[in-house]
Image (cartoon, rainbow, N blue to C red; front, side, top):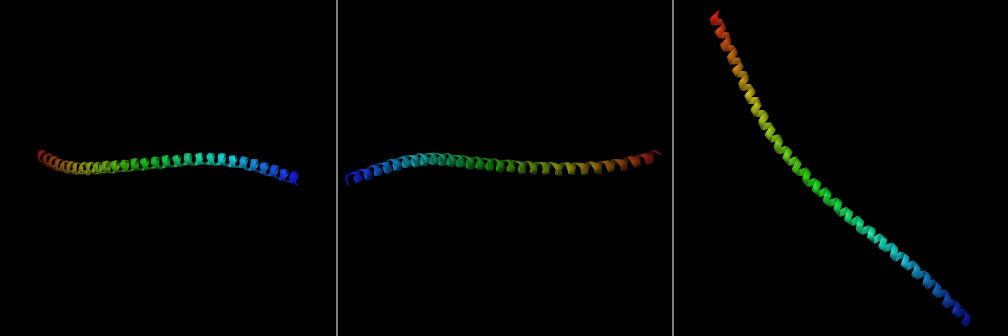
Length: 105
């Protein structure tokens, strides 16, 4: 009976050692996974911040381009007005030249 109890104690010790080893392995695995999780969380945070900055930069670029476009549209309108005035002056000069040529003849 004593031998059986000692065997049982030895078996329990071996199971405890195995359980402790498994527990240590699982703790180590958990620690590794936890570290990976922290790294990935930081990576996600950094990526989100970067995306937010790019989005803000894109908004600023779009705003600047829209303002530049307005300026260019105004400039084009002014140039078209100047062109129209010059065409009218050209037509007037042609009319005057035609009249002067007719008088000369």
